[in-house]
Length: 130
Image (cartoon, rainbow, N blue to C red):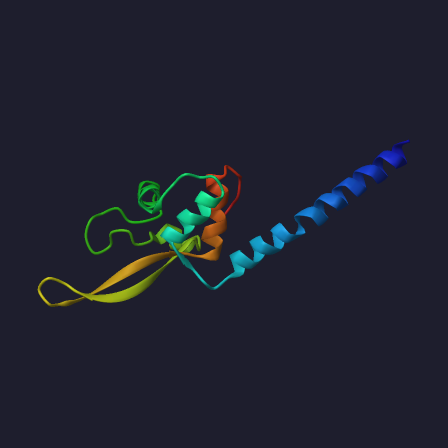
């Protein structure tokens, strides 16, 4: 009887692994991806998973929770040192001309593959470590 129970449990776990194989493969490929996405694109991914948050509210969440700088000025919305060390964000520089005609370097925050998984799991309430 005990051997039969163990065999059934083993078969059940094998079936579960097989059923989740494509999800694991997708998660691993996103995490290993060298392509980072804009915060807007992450908000779309969250919306597709039932999390009602748009780009502006997601930026606000990132600032309030220490992932992006909240001090107004040149560093506003740039990834914090902590979030960069965790591998959740990177920053993409670009040059713009200010109202005085001077060139300024600004940064666009981009969410890494690791960051995508981290925040999707965080918003879905799953435990994970960065």
